[in-house]
Image: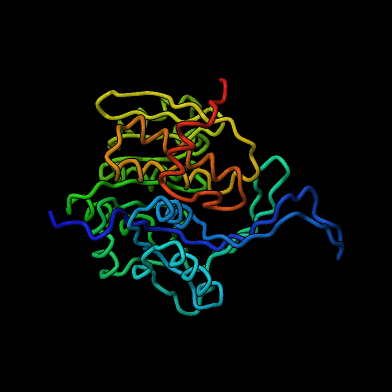
Length: 318
């Protein structure tokens, strides 16, 4: 096995989020509503994982696509500001960068207005795939939204990563019943599948996290780490290890990017060779910090400060 050039390669959807908070109503006609804050953030199921990985100190390679517009330059610049290697990012000519407007409600929930762009048209080049497989961990985020990558191209990327001796992690977005047909060929090449309980329930047909995890492990996944919001997360491995990690008690401001932050924190724990339960605790703390701010990666400063939060935040009572 070749030595890894990066701790993690984060492949998949990269999106520019325009986040406004708090938004209780949309003014009629040409009316105006004053809100507290508007932020630009690198997001998407890959971008929202890459940023936490970078801020947690991992040598991170971004692998995905932006368009040929002004948003592309901002996304690339923001990634580089967080110390993320963008040499794996590709530009799709004639397409805009994927973008989302998020009017965040006072309770932190997040309706989305999304414009598909480069991420939907991106298909990884052979050179970028080779680079991606040089990461110690290869994460793929965005199954179901990577229209040109979903299917055999995604399976081939994960298979190549496993053949290179890498640990593979996987997330998806906006699951539908038909998402299972995209997932099944991938799961035998996935060490850690990290969806939300809402996504797994749609696919597996149950809200029971243990049953959901068994559903995916039976189809080849090495382990499942299912994020469950205020109920914490549930982790189960193919050899029967299973546990629940509770959520932390926080003041929620914005939940956008929390699932992706959970993935980033879990990956950081794997890179740091933490025990599996500690990986889940670190992932939970990473997501909790993000939920206290606005946008993907909010309030994440460093690995050390996130560990300190993990060891000091109060537990949310069941």
